[in-house]
Amino acid sequence: MFTGIIEQLATIKKIVKENENLHITLEADFVQELKIDQSVAHNGICLTVVAIENNTYTVTAIHETIQKTNISLWDITTKVNLERCMQLNGRLDGHIVQGHVDTTGVCTKIENQDGSWKFTFEYTSPTNVTVDKGSITINGVSLTVVESKQQSFSVCIIPYTYEHTNFHQLKNGDHINLEFDIIGKYVSKLLQK
Image (cartoon, rainbow, N blue to C red):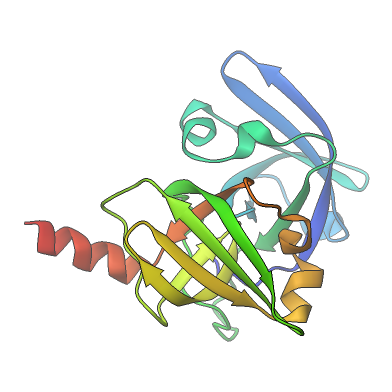
């Protein structure tokens, strides 16, 4: 379980393909605090630490993860948003994030609003919905929906989030990971019945 509050950006050091899996080695400041079998969200994808060496650690993405996320587009130039799992003795600053990406989306518009940025995204999954002022997770970042439309929405980004996540690298046409609000997913499923 996560909150969508990003701790830091990681640098990818190595990607190795083995059969249908990808083994991804990353460098991060908090590696010495990690342990094998720990969950860490990478651009919103919950992945398990399988190896630790010096200031790097390795996670493995299986076929299911590769198919449902943008992880196959990563390379050693990709900056990855990181969040370690939530501690039960702390505040929930973002919203409840599972680290289970629902689908990918595409950045369709970026507007500089003189002190903030408005990003618009589209997605093709008709069963997932957003609502104005509802929660959405984009590349692991907990955000509030500003404008909700059919299979499209926008969010506004403050300077701190822009600078301390990979939002500052996003361009029109970039693919992002989306995790929709868990409560909204349950309500949507109940209404379908």
